[in-house]
Length: 166
Image (cartoon, rainbow, N blue to C red; front, side):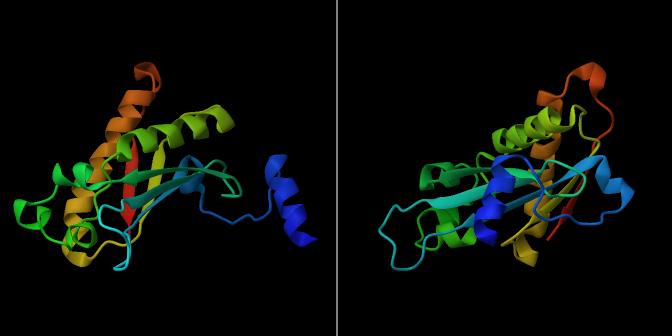
């Protein structure tokens, strides 16, 4: 019965869970991303799965998500030449090829719900090793800023604070 009540709440834009959050986060969104790579027994050419989730309200009770498949062709743009021809290319690479459009969707969903533009993005990223952290931070935080500039009208833009946490 609880499962059904949870689904009804989601469908009617009600809140199932809420979190007490510091005021600074209230002016923004919690954004999370992960890349899941195919396992060792997967067929050759099986793409990785990428997901980006963004909170819609101050209590983080509502959220929307985007998901896409990331194939080897997308990876070759950003992989070092040494990794492109190895069987470990999917496992060695964590950058999200279509990250900016997915973030734009999350920014617009937040605006449609809250009727106000974001001031902060608290970005949580999973599946990144210490060795890849600086590369992911540089590339994906830049894409968050670019998505913000692309979606938010110029006269509505304030300085965006984007924080990356692993």
